[in-house]
Image (cartoon, rainbow, N blue to C red; front, side, top):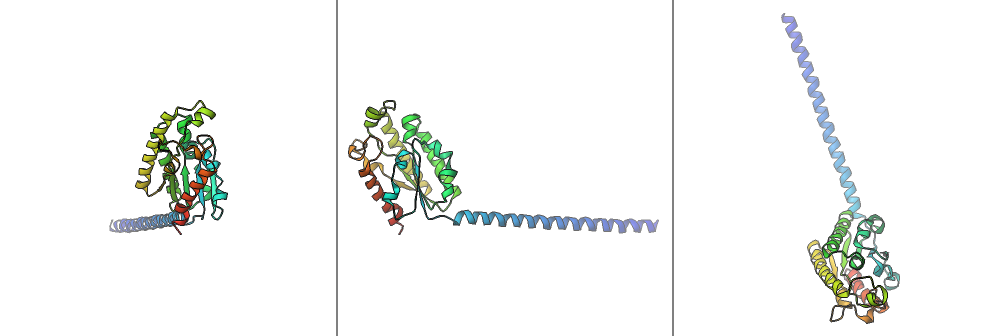
Length: 240
């Protein structure tokens, strides 16, 4: 009996010893795997954060699309990512193609007027979409500096002479002004830079000055010169 008891003791001793060794090995393997994963994640974060191309993406609708950035910024690396007819949702759903593939150091966003002209969207919708666009860019490219332009003023020529289906100017103007005020606050709260082009092009009645447009909506050459001088001073000369 004593002999069998000793055998059982020896058996359980070795059994628990093996179990202990297995548990230690499993624990070490788990710690190793975790540390390796952390290293991998950290490497990815560093790669995305630090590798930023020295270029500026102008992102927007037809006002950007028609903007001859190479003419006005020929000494800088500029990408024109404007598409005529775009709304906030168009950009929000196409950031990979419109922004991320360029991995820019700066993004200049101008969008929203088509939401008011053709979709009858609310100010809340436009502001929320623009905020989402900027947050997504900031998350994907953390070192990218984000600039948000005010929505430009318009005048009644666009409806009277070019597109009678859009809302009256008295409906559009308050939306533009309210949106710009809210965009200014978003920029302040998130360390973006707000670019107040509206004040450069407006009349005393907060309409687009007829000297700066040929159709009531899009800037003409004279306006683009004013806009470019303003942007160049902020985007490039200010940081030099």
